[in-house]
Amino acid sequence: MTRCRSCEAHIIWARNQQTERLMPLDAKPVTTGTLLLDPPPRDGREPVLVTSTHPLYAARVGAGEPLYLSHFATCPNAAAHRNTDQLGLFAEKGPSGN
Image (cartoon, rainbow, N blue to C red; front, side, top):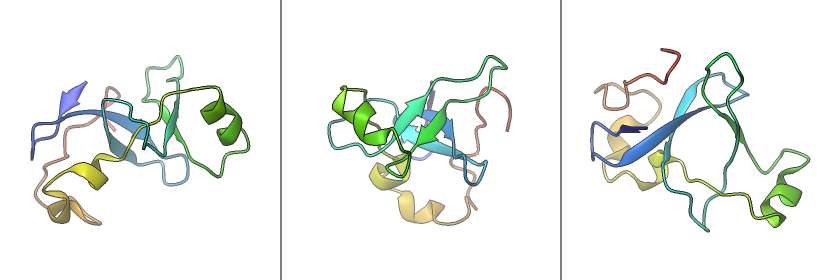
């Protein structure tokens, strides 16, 4: 686990399957979350995001799996990070360095 360089909140990194980019998530699951995580593969890469478009999303939510929020939705300095992270505030890479 790491911290946001902007607001110091604890965050975790997850890989977006569609874009292959890393996305910061609030580290603590919340009932208002919208994202599930698949566990990291054995090669040490980051967990993968599971969104509501995934065929098993509803079943997994119904089974009580923890839900997470994008840190972009909760960071008080999120406007500084829109589209590109020009200030490098989320620049810390995940465990694989990507």
